[in-house]
Image (cartoon, rainbow, N blue to C red; front, side, top):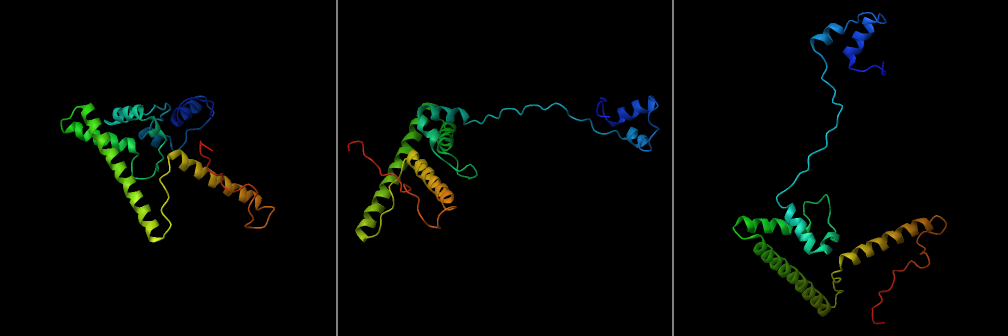
Length: 184
């Protein structure tokens, strides 16, 4: 019956009209309460535009490196561009013009970043003074991604190599590459 067009009710009526099928018992019930029509066309979901989307786009246009800042998708902590746009939108609602709000938020973000860097430097100095190992310097996002990729490569090579080697043996060349300065 898949070659016939229509729903179950119309198919049954056609078969009964052609004399192929006797009147089924369920036909009266289906006629009284017909099945819901089947939706055959899938409509595309409408584009959702948030008030801060224009501000996020302009932030990315001014700071293209921000596109590469990693963040957890399933986290409640939004990406920095969205935080920036929310703060700018908040200032615009208080009566500031778009450009004024942007300049204020950029100054706030720079001050927060500078304070974070100063706190890290102070913690490093304190750790060195106390004889502890200092916390690592803040890496750029590219360096973080490269370090993570390197760890994954080493893990994969060790998994691959452990199939024919003893557990715990390092593969040759599995030490991380030395950082070479531009002046050496």
